[in-house]
Length: 452
Ligand code: ATP
Ligand code: MG
Image: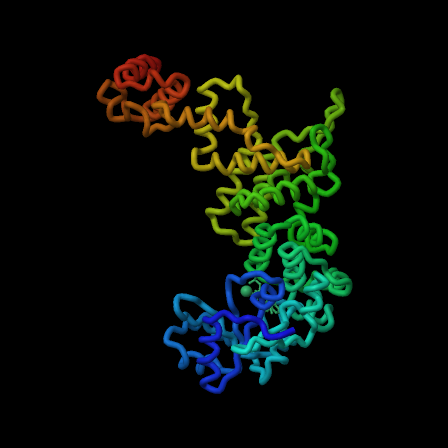
């Protein structure tokens, strides 16, 4: 294999290093992508220059991870992470290495990396490969293989097993046998990894083109039981009826569809977790001979809340995912009155509706195993849009009267004022024609008599 074609910007940066007598290599995901014939979004560099030296070579350098020997350089609007060659030897808590020691050569630096496909480097600016562990061969064979002995590498850092299944989901690769077989023995180390690092990997699995591949690999290796026991409990929970799959496969298919459609993160997460409560509420209806799952959406939301807190998801993500899960059981029919449509909008919240409809598509995909026709939701969408463009009030602030108006009309301030406003809103949801000042005041005075 001849030299690889190197981006002019990378060559320009490389000349700054070589001009100072230093070596620099492209490493990590960018090399993997190059070998896969893909374009890479971000470039990681490795060098024998120390961070203090890198800082002197470039105008704009941010000390992003100086404790790990990493700085970020900004050059012509592009950010690159530059890490000094290092070896990592001591890990005491399954988390980050305790001590950083710099390494003299790129080969030594590559030997501390996790998988062979991540342990190849491209010398810059020339563009020749340094590939001591045959990462190129494993990429050709589509295999994820640890550098060195898998047991040892997983014992050093318990995140690596999860990274392995994450790459399987992202790339559609298989785990090489010894790498796969070493995961169950590493679970105790994985259990001690910081929740934020785990979250990052789970997010990447859910954003990958094949999330089900990642979660099935997690199930096979015990990672699912360790990290998401609530999801593992859905295995073997049969549903029948319209459903072709057990609750776990249903959830994985729903999440896979959401990922494939490019739906937002919250929808993908809700698709994965929306039925977690089913194993807890499943009852056999003796008369009809079917399984029922009453109120599973509440239980699902409760369990999902626990998961999202455990992995320290931001509050905004938690709120949206839980709202989606709680509302996922709506059953629209043409016979719904306009008032019923308005009530649906109010309960759900207008902002959530597009994502809730996406979740419904994912849910259907996971029920039948057949891609749903988005047009099936069109009649409901039209009813919602029509309702939103009409003048009908949807919240107290849209009413043609406010509390002050009511007091002006003789309502005594206090608890009854709030009750009357709520009743007016109910009336307007039922019949938007009533949303006129005079009409509402008249109704309010009638209600008020009940409180005299
Ligand atoms: P992506 O950026 O798509 O997540 P990546 O391979 O670039 O993939 P990073 O987390 O950015 O992954 O890490 C860059 C490189 O650092 C990896 O390719 C790998 O060589 C090394 N690396 C990252 N995390 C670990 C780890 N936990 N153990 C060993 N090496 C690691
Ligand atoms: Mg990267």
